[in-house]
Amino acid sequence: MMEGRSTSTANRDASGLAVSGLRLMARGATLVEAASFGLRAGELIALLGPNGAGKTTLLRGAVGLARPAAGWARIEGEDTATMAPSRRARRLAYLPQTRPLAWPSPVRDLVALGRFAHGAVLGRLRGADRAAVERALAACDLLQLAGRSTATLSGGELARVHCARAFAAEAPLLIADEPVAELDPYHQFRVMELIRAFVADGGGALVVLHDVALASRYASRLIWMKGGRIVADGPPTTTLTAARLADIYGVRGRIDGNRVEIEGPI
Amino acid sequence: MKASAARPLAGSAALALACLAALFAACLLGSTPMEAERVLAALLGQGSAGDQLVVTHIRLPRALSAFAVGAALGASGAALQGLLRNPLAEPGVLGVSATASLAATAALYYGYAATSAWAVPTAAIAGALAATALIALAALRTASAVTLILIGVGLSSFAGATMNLLMNLAPNPFSLADMINWMLGSVANRSFLDLAFAAPFLIAGFGLLLAAKRGLSALTLGEEAASGAGLNLRRQRLLVVLGAGLATGAAVSIAGVIGFVGIVAPHIVRPMVDHDPARSLLPSALLGGLILVLADIGVRLVPTASELKLGVVAALIGAPAFIWIAMQRRSVHD
Image (cartoon, rainbow over all chains, first blue to last red; front, side, top):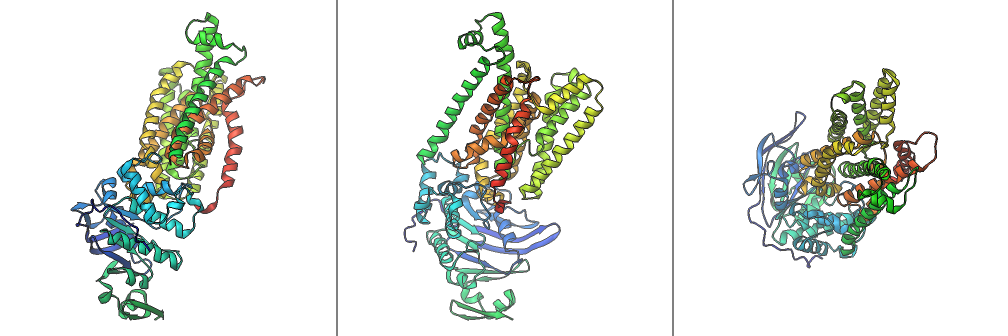
């Protein structure tokens, strides 16, 4: 579906994101405890866990938007929490759970915001920024929609616009929080294909998913979270088991290769 | 993309020309209309002594005051709307103007105005900054723009009540008249000196808002995604709060409370700049200035027993516009 992607790989570095012993707290409550993992180029990691497991908090801590109470998250040896925001954004693109946009901006402007950390000014894009935006629009099949107002798009189209915004940054790493939430099955695959193409092109991606089958199909590694802790981290072949589904989600499931069938609550 | 890049520039140029024309017209029109040649001669310092007085000491400073106030409010409105991601945010609605006006009135009431010419502008700006900071603090705690606007309503009411108290206790009719002037908002009898005292704060405010310009675009995404995209959120909030506080305070120090310009101007501009709050900043300032210069010409020409106050006219036009914009909104955004 996405053969046409041709993002420049020149600025991509093999060294990725490293998180060690991260503890994140809010109003005295510990939301994430002793979390350690790494994210490197060529990896597509799915972060799995029930609601309230601390997935979003862990992502925010890894990106540096939440200050750790203990431990650290580093990109190329630099703490993300103290890095200049624009410097960090050039190395790591972050897609939080989507919220309504404040204004009905044109699609091209919204994708161009992915170049914010490169100093892009909307309506006056310079050569490199303009080229990156056009590449991202093409990769996400949005060229026809580029002039449309985001207020007129469907949920699936909007999800692609946000992906294009992340890709336009041309950062070596991507962290996305539930990028396929509320999408129909076709668009879920569509977005996952885009992220897979990003990884095939030399990027590294960490994605929060709720669909275990989708995760096992696309991810090279699964990180399982429960109660604020990482309880397992490894390829689907070793970490995706019926016992794991029971432990993490409290559901009965059957695993056959990378096919997953959830049968019901325990 | 070329078209959308060229449009705002051409639009701003056209607006700037319209502003110049309106300023010139403000010098022509009045209780004694003057021909263009006489106004030009007076502006160039070659008119008769009487013309000179009317044009350069009465009409021009008054028109420039209206323009400066409108521009400050237009730019502050556009920037606050970008920061709070809500088209109803504005110094007047958020209670910033009323608080600034209260502080200025208090400076008058307690006689500080007599001790230094800087007292009233400084008080107005301190009031504006305090109110803007309070709103921004509240914005940290809540994502709901409705809450912020309710806080603004509360601030306005409190400032209004305190002003009423000061008026209630006013020692003599002269200070009472002074205070009413501040509450109603007017640029009558303003001199270049009044403008000069406000100018440093106006310029500093505009400078800070311009520095915050690009970040306003990023905030279209919401705060979380904007900081993910590389925006320094703390710095952005500080720049807009200080910039809007200084500019609004300076505007209030010139004219008292003039509401709704900061809503109407950005609302008209926004569709022409692809709804980008950054690109709406300059045109909103120009349009805000234009609206007030024209409204002030209207105020001077309408034959009423006592002259209409500019702030009253602005609210008569602006408040219905506010209601209309509020009714157009879908609840999704709150």
